[in-house]
Image 1 (cartoon, rainbow, N blue to C red):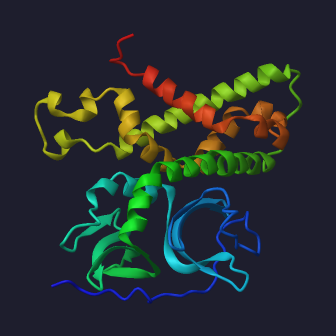
Image 2 (image 1 turned 60 degrees about the horizontal axis):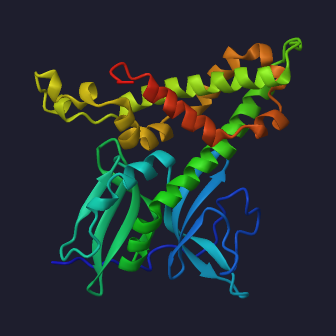
Length: 307
């Protein structure tokens, strides 16, 4: 029997979730803000940076008296790690299925195919587990039609790119400047600025490479380990080369990195050059390029790599 879902449960009140929008988070159809993706009707995916956090939203928008769109509370939000965990399973969700299906992701996101007036819809609901292991659902539900869902499948890589850009261009820069401001700078080092930039850039790439490698090891899903194979050749955690690990696990591993701790380690490693870490210097860095170089360094560190 197909269970019916009431799409009207939820609030249509305005919600603000981005530092960029200030008090007014509305926009017109011909001026969609950066990192916003129209999924059809008045449903949008939005990547935001707010209160030092990057988040992905799937949300219903409404129109005000001037026909401007504004976000409502009817929606769900993802951390970057939860978003990438969802993306890794996006192909498993079939919006045209004739049966209802439910997928649980990271014990915090329920995605269900339900029927509204006999038409399949994809329902996103956030929850957390209580001490008695029962589920407590978080207010706010996102309902996607089949067309919304197909568009989300089409643009999910673009959304991930926006998450990457805000993580590096906004969050990482701000964390770096904030942490540097907490420490009393030492005496000015008489070093050529270009040399300092090279030293600091190389240091950040090496540190990010180390964190990325540890994070990949943490999220690596080895079938051989799960099945307790005795033959090491049956373990992907041993046989898989580093380039393939980056391809399968790189994005998820990135979003599980503790960036606050990474920045603290970076500051301590380079405390003698702290005077150079001002906003002008830090904003010159191409953070995405630094991450790309960290990935290349990780691949080059593969002990079994054939040159």
